[in-house]
Image (cartoon, rainbow, N blue to C red):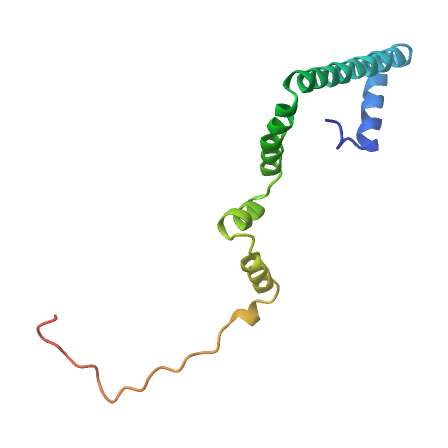
Length: 127
């Protein structure tokens, strides 16, 4: 849950806590928050253990679709297109990215127009 919180964010939280709560109440607030988080983790762990004990091997069968759902949540649009529409073939995206790097490489050589012997034939019935 807080995996993306870095030291800079923690420092900002401490400074804001010092301003709002003051130096006297801040250590107690930090202790209370740590205890509340620890208790919440214990509740979640005990609920998971209880479900695992009651469901038995079916609990592992339930985890498989949930892990698939988690994979889909983390998928970018490019990865989704590659996996589902292109069957994992990423060559389309690599070709487009190489065109973006050097657009001169994508300009084809001009094709010579065929030589006509004279003016195009005129069909009065077609017009």
